[in-house]
Amino acid sequence: MYLKYCGGYDEIPEGMDRYLNMYGPHFNKKLCEEAAKRMYTEVNGKKQYITPYAKEQVEALLKSNNIQLERDVMYDSVYIANMVKADFLGKAVPSEQHLAKYIKDAIDDPDAIPGYIFNRFFADCMFMDKPIEWEDML
Image (tube, rainbow, N blue to C red; front, side):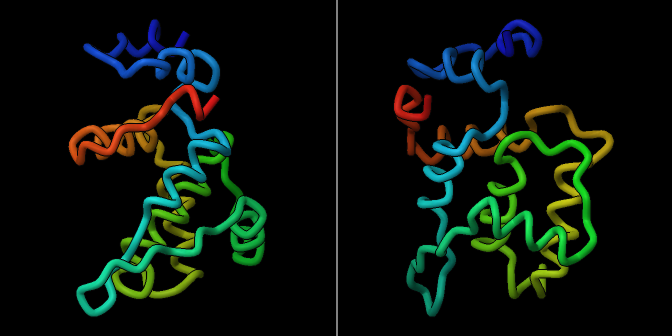
């Protein structure tokens, strides 16, 4: 179904069509966990893999900052939280309060197309030659 309304991809990896038809361009729990376990930050020039946020932690963070998401689907906000933790937290995003605001801005962006977060992740995987075993994500 997703492939029909988005116009499809020129070439998609085996199993991705099944994933997209089941979940659309969004993160289910398995894909979010897979993505998060690949995330790291650099400390003194060395990779340091993050301890990922769980869905319950992200929900608690948003609630404690009085933030409600309007367009969140499955685990998209959890993916964003972990991506920001790896790449921006303590830098351009100075605190977890700002992290909560970032999640809100990314998820509820009024001019973003549905699935843009997923599509960015997929593009990164392809360009970095780090494929996803899509059948394992079902």
